[in-house]
Amino acid sequence: MTITHHPSEELLFDYGAGALSEAWSLAVSTHLALCPQCRHDVDDVEALGGELLEGLAPVPVSRSAYDDVIARLDSEDAPEQPTARVPGHVLPQPLRGYLGSDADGLDWQRLGLGAHHILIPTGDTGITARLLRIPAGRPVPTHTHGGLELTLVLSGAFSDATGHFGRGDLQEADETLEHQPHATPGEDCICLAITDAPLRFSSFAARLVQPLLGI
Amino acid sequence: MSLAVPPVRVGRRAVALRRALPMTVADESIPDEMTRLLGAVARDRDRVAFQALFEHFAPRVKAFILRQGTDPGMAEEVVQETMVNVWRKAAQFDPAKASASTWIFKIARNLRIDLLRKAYRPEPDMNDPAMVGDPEPMADDVVSRRQHAGHLRVALATLPAEQQQVLQLAFFREKAHAQVADELGLPLGTVKSRIRLALARLRSELGEFE
Image 1 (spheres, chains in turn blue, red):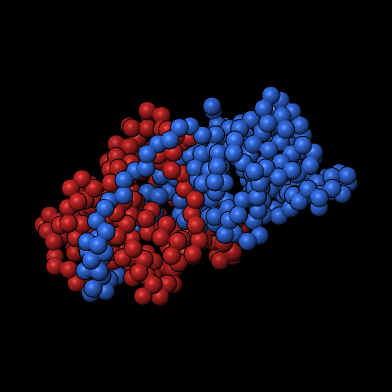
Image 2: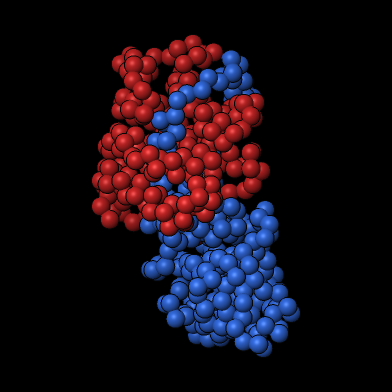
């Protein structure tokens, strides 16, 4: 697996600095699970955070702070151990935890045109996170975006005029992109899609059914 | 520094220098000493090492949290929670991957999101079998990362003020690119290029040429 489409520097930086909200972070961090190169870039951002922390002029803590912390250590002195590994998954963490299941145990909702989805609740209002399943070889109607859309491929693949997207690839689309993604034949395309505004379908027919599709 | 804990010898030279120099160009040996101490906590559950870490980092984490405009009582709570987590999670610290200050920054950042923003931060799970591991060559890079940590600190202190300003808004006030642009009344592209320049400077100090 070679990932060719990565999150922008901007997204990786905001994630590393702790400034990216939950829904966008879900797409970025799930990409990170599949992409050592971007993890490395986030490590650099975090190293910068560490140096900024190191350089701050210290502010005295309360007199009892140290004793309070020690009292808590004494009451719960069981260090956290790394958790045990379990057999392979299609959906990496943290996404799998949000869905409560791997790809084969999901409760898909029909979306029309053969597509299915699962809405993923997050703490972000006004941002929609969903897992999408587009049937192998089928197109999604041509659309533009009212805002930002992040699409992370988890299995199968899709293509549009901007390129081919396979497992781990992340597409960052904004108002300027009009595209018609096609799922690659052979395997359904499962992807995580985060949007902060409804899609704008270009054809009248697709716009007519949009309220029914709920997308 | 006024702290309620008795002073701990971290190494005489390091302590003396820390008092003598401005914080932005502190002695380069202190961060390495902190990384060693954190290793001792991880390995031996060493309370003396933990006390030295507390003395160094608790007041910095407090400064970090206060930068956001948090009230001091709440900041104190985040500091204590951070230090408890340093103890609890120490076994997960890998000195080959990060310095103590980077690792503690990550804990404080996550607790700030959790306790102050009351939000959840999704993160990859390093033990997840679905996780794609690091390729071998990254080991070299780790060595240079550690060797250059001191240079990095000096480089940060000498960044142009406009780059420092955007970094501080991002790291200390949790402003994403677009919010930094709003706050400073700058085009988004300007904010992006300032952050990109700061990161490029950092990477060249780390010996990474991309």
